[in-house]
Amino acid sequence: MSLVTTPVDDNLTNEQREWVVESEALWREAHAIAAANPGMDAGDVYHSLRCLELPPSQRLARGLNRVRRHPHIG
Picture 1 (cartoon, rainbow, N blue to C red):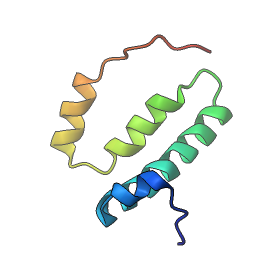
Picture 2: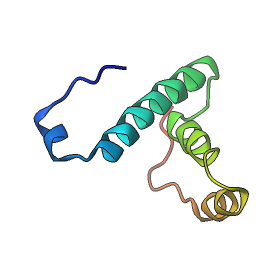
Picture 3: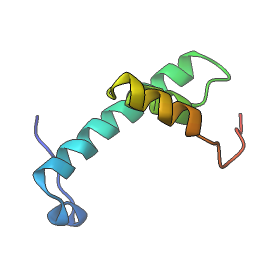
Picture 4: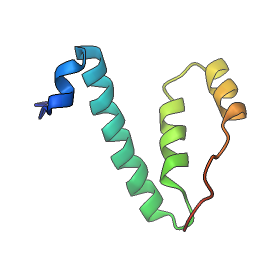
């Protein structure tokens, strides 16, 4: 996969760049899922997709500690 770089990318390590690429892919998937399911929040979907990468104990801890800072706006 080729990566388009920006000036900000110059300060990132390879590991950080990989995380950014993966995160952007998850956001695209989250937005697609949310668009196909009215009333679903893309941020919540992204959080769920990101949590699937964690071991169960960490998923539980993050799920119980997540607090919405901004109200959902349809």
